[in-house]
Length: 174
Ligand code: HEC
Image (cartoon, rainbow, N blue to C red):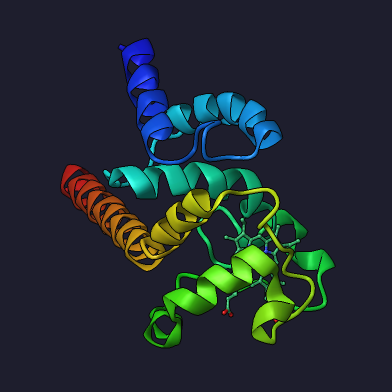
């Protein structure tokens, strides 16, 4: 079952611009390893092909600065004088244009008047891969919201359970 899932994902990636035909040769060698990783930690939501492919690229190249959930809080973010963009903020997406996103990723922060601390990826990722990573970034606010909701529900459930336990303890005392 796991293997079948793995093959589906690899097949999907091959069809969406994550493969050697559209990508940079060296980057692709890495991909087979992280594709496996991506299968282990399945996306929190069924993402469409381009988004799922973009997520693999994101987790490999961007997560170190922009964070697991795209909140700009990756492991390396503390070393940077400028905080990496938090993609979970809906207000950002109201002003972000596709053109700007593509330029920032392809040519780096300076191409759009932002910090040089945002590297250029145009020599590492193909245009198709950059399209996919943007498709994934667009899903970040919904994914973060969904996770927060699930966490709140879990906390409420636990609280209720504790209350019930207290009640039954009190009843037992009488
Ligand atoms: C070395 C750390 C680092 C890595 C790795 C990194 N970024 Fe960034 N990124 C930044 C920083 C810092 C900024 C904020 C620049 C600013 O606000 O001046 C930024 C900004 C951006 C922006 C611009 C958002 C805006 O404000 O318009 C986009 C888009 C972006 N990153 C996407 C990516 C993607 C996609 C990847 C992976 C392919 C990636 N970044 C990898 C550090 C990084």
